[in-house]
Image 1: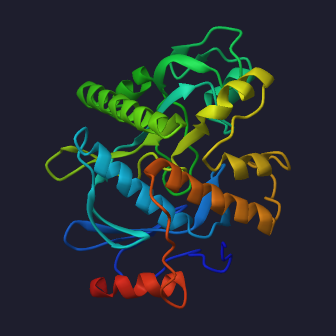
Image 2 (image 1 turned 45 degrees about the vertical axis):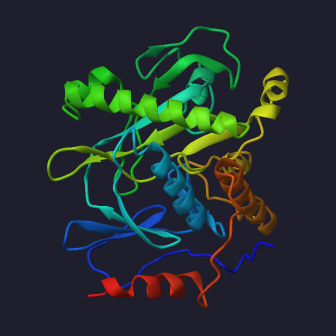
Length: 318
């Protein structure tokens, strides 16, 4: 039973230093080059906050933990500790100014997705040339990287090509080559492990930063339903044949609901009903259990999730 009252809609804790509040995470910089990253239950799409989904922050933190553990041989990550189910203590990094998006299928609903742009008639996307006649959600011949600007302070991500990245000095050629090879290796590992669980890892985004020595480190999260699109493999072929959206394990369920009712980039977001909130929470829980093979156990300690987080972070209070 999903308790709709157990939500962490924010983690604004005045006793913690140097706050930064993002779309989904509430973060605090500690004076010793560490950062506290608290995953709230907010759900973001179309560059907006849509709702708060019970247990979502815990699911994302613990699923990212699973993937960080299973990809550490490919790329070092920022994680130092997990003091709470919703919290990561991470190494403070200088975040690189682009997001690396890897796509294995012609899919998506947002303005930067290749399917959205392809259906508008565009055939050169992110420097890649696409032929006519591709079907919605069709597999690409090989995964491609579609980088975007890293939008800070609530801005909008913009498509980039490799040529633009180098010309604008966003990354050096060496950095780009390292990042692209690493991202494709991470995606290949993710697709392989997902397939073993009856899932298709469709696309994902990675965020990288540099430490004080200039080393490139994987940051943020990895292969979660917020950063990635998953489909159930056993429903994919039927959906491809009849032109419907494959059964998914990601926030497309709520993105699609909103997009069917308004222009989500311009119109007010309609009130999202309780049954959609519950269904979305269940998608996150099902995703965790299917991908990791572990039973999800919500942490219900504390009068509220915020009370629990505050207690578990009290050692960091100034």
